[in-house]
Amino acid sequence: MPPGALTIIGNTGDDFEHCGLPISPDLDTICYTLSGLADPVRGWGRAGESWNFMDALATLGGPDWFSLGDRDLALHVLRAEALRSGTSLSEFTSALAARLGIAATILPMSDDRVRTIVDCDEGALAFQDYFVRLRCAPAVRGVRFDGADNARPGARVLAALADPGLAGIVICPSNPVLSIAPILAVPGMADAIRNAAAPVLAISPLIGGKAVKGPTRQIMQTMGVGADNAGVAAWYGDLIDALAIDRADAAQAADLGVPALVTETLMNTDADKLRLAHWVLDYFNGG
Image 1 (cartoon, helix red, strand yellow):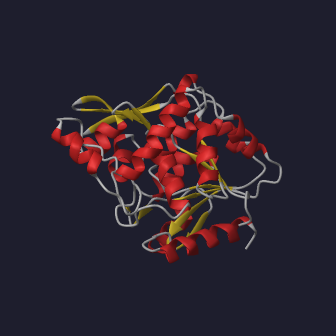
Image 2: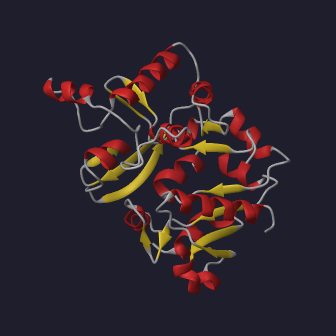
């Protein structure tokens, strides 16, 4: 795609403060990935990382359950200083992307504070406590998004969705409840997507009724959503124009309630990712 043609709207419900620093896991992973700095083995953080800070933190009895590498730490320190000085998260993220040589536009869903809270047997847990510290072990009773009611989509987010030249909107195969729902919970976001002059394609995170990784299936069941492609389609409802499903689930295509498109959605390698990306672009271009 030509420079500037792609806009990515990232979830900030996972954001939190750790050791006094503001952490934006989803936005940071996007930036590290598109700049070629991401660790391909762990799937998060930077490649070639060292862990002197974490070793020292553990020695001093600090909270070492969330790993901050020495290189990664520089980003969080800079963001903390920028936010303290009045820079918005959108402005900081744009400057970071430019510094890293990323041609795509990367935007947080909102500059207002929204936090994903997981209600479980242990009580109300911040998302990172549930996901990282407790490794998704507690039984989940519900998920809510604190601050969403008072948040607003970023101005550049709304402008991107209202662009008359927009070719398409893709909802990536992330966990619908934990990664996509926080974005849609921001008032005005879902309507902006529905009113966009472009088709909306969601990619199912399930293959053969199972998630590739993470607690997607369990969370969907907890929230009363069928843990299959029909459940994913029902979850998005009239927000989407089509749902992409894996070839392994081709037999379900006629029973999803929305137009179903069959392709290979499993991404194990960079070649797999490129193949699926080209397939999405072909769909939006009428191929």
